[in-house]
Image 1: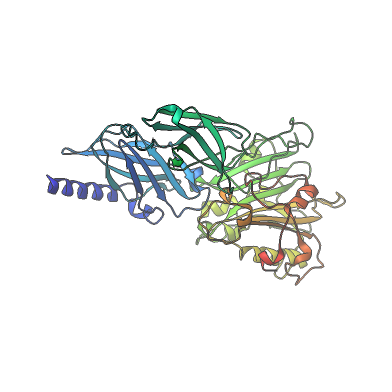
Image 2: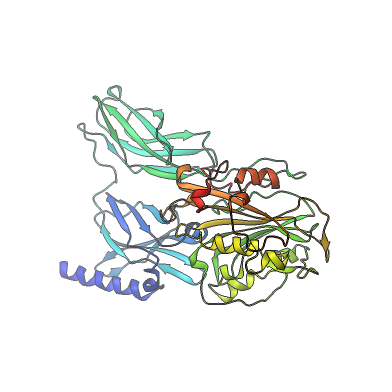
Length: 493
């Protein structure tokens, strides 16, 4: 029988390799890991995807029991937790004393990618051990009813001692925090729950259930959850922020400002990989010019497509009745998100030639080789990192004195930047502490007198200062972004 199951598992492995791009997926997925407690399995799978990719894709785990007849139909669970670039899930209600196979997957624009498969065997009966008066026993902690400011914590518990002899509590804290906050619950066996309020939006918390008995502290496993993005403020009138960013998992997004009839927004996924974002844009119909373009900057967007020069109307904005200008007399067509930054495919490169991404820029001394803006773009290209650089490129109008071909010409251009200090932590910036992050803005005057000028401290301001200048809120999805300060030496200046 042992030989039979060995051969059967080999057949299952061969099957997994032959379908759904497992061989290609193995470049992106590590081998999953699994911890079994009775009929519950905790599975996780580290990946090589950039931060935010898993949150934007249809990802999960697929698992199936293995019998003498072979593999029974796979069950797919998309009820997962994305911890940076790692997938996690709890598989519960499994059959007892049964062999299972499991693999992780992600549906991207190029198709389904999946990890190598692993096998595990469940134990007897419930995932909770039998009551043992000698030691408290815990189930698997979980979080539910998660909002921007609250969550419900749950955990099974079994103990045979009199309830008057011990106490129970949940402990929780932000992952970047040092001390736990405690919430007491009633003693006794069963599922324990507590509702938390006044949490911070877009923040990852860790928690556990603790029992205090006979001078000793016993704890469950520690589990994490992430609160949703803030619902924001403002009544939608005037120039006040209209609420949260469009997508809470995108660190680069500014908060939308509601200016009816003027500001138009578009959020572009890659045409060749519909689960992966390309860039987002705010366009001013009044000024006939992009206001900002936000995008993640990572080597995964680089390839061999080259430049296609297919300038065209942004189809999203055109569909909303907002036309865009291609050429302004006396000015070059300046990309806010550069063509060379999106060469992974022809389709992806064509999108950066949408006119919503094109702003009027002076050629001589500014957008040409050795011009100040060209030099700043080359400098920022050197800041790309494994953890992803998040960038907002924008226009600023100190005045509206200069117009060309219907466009109000910006007096300044800026770049707002955010990334990890280390650059290769493997952590999503949303989950990083303040000390692990750095952000800054570079702002330059739009004129032709700065040829051969390289990025320097005189161009740098804090993100908080840029917010005061422009009226936009930047990096709203990154709760610990140090927007009030910057250190030139952190940026090599």
